[in-house]
Image 1 (cartoon, rainbow, N blue to C red):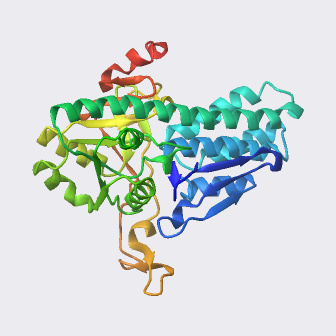
Image 2 (cartoon, rainbow, N blue to C red; image 1 turned 90 degrees about the vertical axis):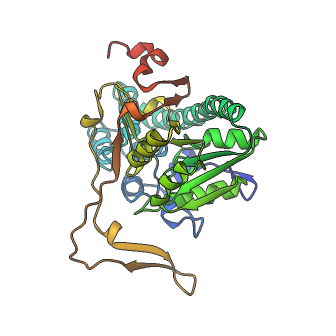
Image 3 (cartoon, rainbow, N blue to C red; image 1 turned 180 degrees about the vertical axis):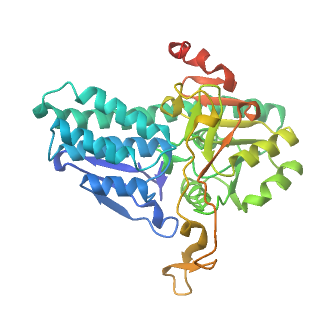
Length: 360
């Protein structure tokens, strides 16, 4: 997508130098900073500390992290060690585990001297597939948006939660890909962006929408319900970190509350995700592990001080007990449709899009 009019991806690979450059998303929206990742530990830290975030981008970064690790040691022992280090960084986003399993399946049968080059090629293939799949999601979502627009003329008001735009992927995004497709096609579209406490990923959504010229309004998380009840929302679309075989959806905490509000106000609720987010081996939402992040994410507020410098303020006493679940699960019954690179379908009919998993 665009930064100041310049087409940009979130990840730049340099196979000849055995390293990648990523956007340090912990510094957005206040500063755009590219970060060099040249070791296994740096790749693992980037994922764990949310310098990269969003399930598809986590998967691509993990694939490149494995390629980086094999650049110095391609033995079986190091391959297994590197994969486990990366696998332990985030438990909920299935794209991470999918990408590493794909890499290991390719690399393990190869001779050690063949693994490094093969790893860089496969990581590049995973990244390119992500771009193509997200672009396809955009077109399928655009068709849905056109139908809504046909029934309800005027500006299309879409609400989203967290950041499922191009910053969460290699390019285009998942939930925001249809928004970008609609905007680029000339449809009048406006996006309600929820702040998404405590990490405020909604600020990243607002930043990237502004870079691409898409009209939007940032709202407090708790304002979502009244906007729907007042008729100011035509549809809600979110991404996902894992979708179970029965269509239950794990996404950023707060998603479930928006789905409940949609159900009470007859607002369609869509989930956009590529194949790598679908976990046909996971029977339902109750089987999805929910990451509990450190308490200080909630205790502290980050922003710019009066001098324009990045700063953190303590909003709670150090000893205050807090709960900080990073995700929640929206049951399939609250989801209007899941949009993937193969099309859109009700959540309990995913195998119509992926018949190869019908017997999973």
